Image 1 (cartoon, rainbow, N blue to C red):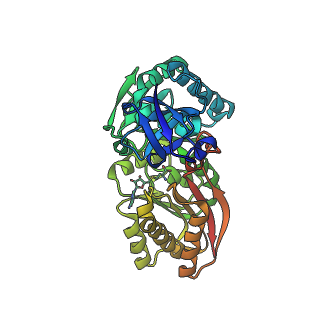
Image 2: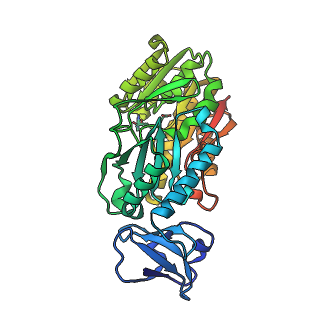
Image 3: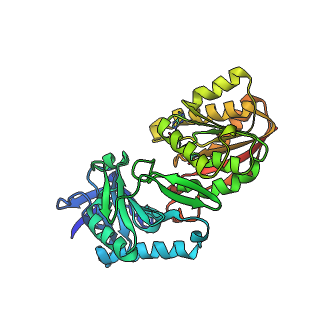
Length: 395
Ligand code: SAH
């Protein structure tokens, strides 16, 4: 097996069981491992630390499969890890509430770069790293064994693959082609999901528990659902008897499915609007018109992608939160999220604090929101905790 030797003292993160080794920590690569090939990781004293997949193009040069240098990486390894991840989910009894949830959550399930989401018997996978791509056949074969009834579809059409030097692709890996729409349920709500073309693997499964927890804030309210995607919080709001729901998204396609989702839940379209456009502009438009709302949901896409775009992203969060705070009536509810992994919850709170000062309003956090149980986060991998939110009362 080819070997990678780390610079002195750069093994610290490995000893703390963090699964990433950055290219700057590598002293020497013995041989020329191909992208994704398994390498033995050694410290500068030549002591073995574990096995990982090598990715020559990425800043994350190695993603660690195991901290046991004796373990063998192959189909048996992937079978064990996937089975373990699935058993953990079974243990959480998610099936009672929904038929759509995450089965493999990448690093946090000991499978860096591998995402597997379950949508009513269709498994939708993403292979995001060179290592995941290298072992795709074995991973799919393990999935087939564990889920003999399920079809498997690949959604590796994700830009992060370019950082790993991988091309974008999607398509059937096993079984049937998914239908254009799969019906999923979350509690007593149904959603159509387009796993072939929708965002991520088709649906924002990571917001499931937050959709449930926020349902109590919408009754009799005039609700502005910003960055609505296919309905999500808007459907929860109307199902909880909101007075009116205005959904905004920049994509006409997702708004079409959003409308279908309101219909699927037998909700009256008289109370719903679907506005296609830029939330940053719409919030200003509502401000200029003197509109007011009782509740506003802000669930933007990731606004901070890297350290170099941190300040610009932060300004984006501040902008929409400031506008939303101003648009809320006294006593109104702001439900605000950030899915930027680089933004710590305390920093996100600071953004809302700055916005409240500029808006000259008092803002009280009444609930902290995070990630659902199926999106497990390994305690040694804090990067896994990317989604955070607050429910705030604006006084
Ligand atoms: N809340 C949703 C998920 C939101 S994802 C749910 O629970 O399902 C973010 C959404 O914002 C995407 O649908 C994307 O199309 C949309 N979007 C991105 N930038 C936007 C912008 N500037 N204005 C409006 N919508 C935007």
